[in-house]
Image (cartoon, rainbow, N blue to C red; front, side):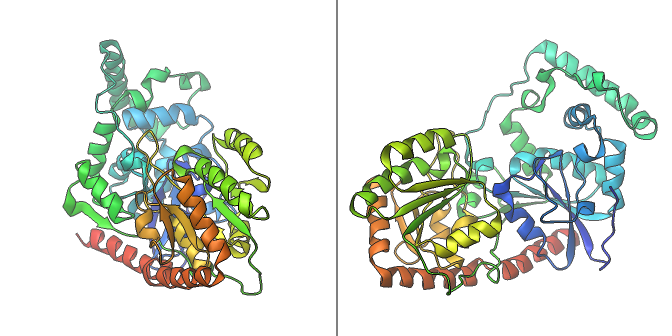
Length: 429
């Protein structure tokens, strides 16, 4: 692992994500790799998939890359603000001008890192990190646990300099800190969120909907900037040589919020009159087995493809006729903050059928670039899907309007220029 300084002498910015990086969040890389005046370096606690397909390894430095004893150091960082000295040195050697953290749930830890390095912090809120129901009660109330935490903090304060200069790896046995010392037991979600609001120099909302939720949860209005994550319209454009097929495409995590269950039920209605229409589902998640069983019971023509590469997703968007991710508000309160995949589909000339939920109303214009049904209404969903499949001229009309709207409002190049203006504004202050 080497701290490779940018040869173009661009300013360095650290992109923080606790776990680098779920396949559903590659839009973070797309944004960071397309800023021009700054060079992005990536950090977090651990990798959960290989990023080498997207970015050079010398621009990634997670805690788990630095040390095999990451369990101990993760808890030391989170509980006592003690950073592994090599990790901290590596990040400081980058001479970053700021940290840009994605997802408010990670902002609590990014704030600790920003304080240690001494740089401003920007936190982007995307959806569940502000829409889900929060625990309002401090769960770290047991006096015995508080006693242990207090003692651990004292030890950390005394030995911090010693650890930083003399100890680079600790014995594996010391990693066995009890589970009740993990961060979920230290502060309630509500209190962690309040800290992020206080510590961050800027809070980015990915939609007006997320902006309203931030205000509801107590974020100072003067800290919030609404900024849509853009789509590379040069990369996401349809190949006219590829013929559209009678395919309804779903791309997303197989979790409650994405509403795949209601799409399957709606497609059962569609296939009664249009049996040749195929449902193609790209993605994975906890509900996959349940959804596969439901599809086996209700549908005749369907495929579950699991996780696909961005290139494969584009190919499917190019040959499908309708894009449908009918997102809903989950029981936890988790709501679609915007849905960059809707913008990607429209950039590919693919009309959308979804639900009027959360930030989707900003991503898709009802009756102009797609159709938005009431949440969980499978009758309306099926009606809209059939309407687009049977009406080629309407589908083409929506496709043209959708592409134009993405070019005007969700263009990555223009939107990243606005992001860099946010960076410059924070640094100038």
